[in-house]
Length: 147
Image (cartoon, rainbow, N blue to C red):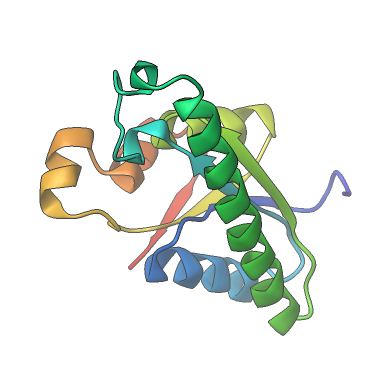
C-alpha cells in the first residue's frame, strides 16, 4: 500500500446492502486501497450471551464455523473486486459490530468508511442499535452509508 492513496474500509456481512456498499466503494474509489472487513459478532448466535457455558467447547465450535463462513464471504468480496479489475485486502475480527469497525478504522488509519444501511430487522435495531447509525455517530472519519 502507498501512503498517498486513499484508504477505504468496507464492513461486509451477508446482506445485499453490504455488497452494494462494496460495489459503490469500488466504483467511487477505483484507485483506493480498499479493505473488506467482516466482524464475527457472538451476539448474532442463537446460543447468545450466557449460553456459551452450557456445553464444553460450544463457543469454540461456533467460532470455527463462523470463521469458515467469513472466509467464504471475504472470498466473495474478492470476486466482486475482480469484476472491477481491483484487488482488495480482507480481514475478519471477533467483537461487537460497530465498536470493532470503529476501532479497526482508527487503528488502520483509514480515510473513509463505506457501509451498507440497515440490514437487521427493526426489533434488532431497537435492541442492538443500528450498526451503520452507530458508526456514523461515532466515527472520526467520513462515513458513506449506502442504501
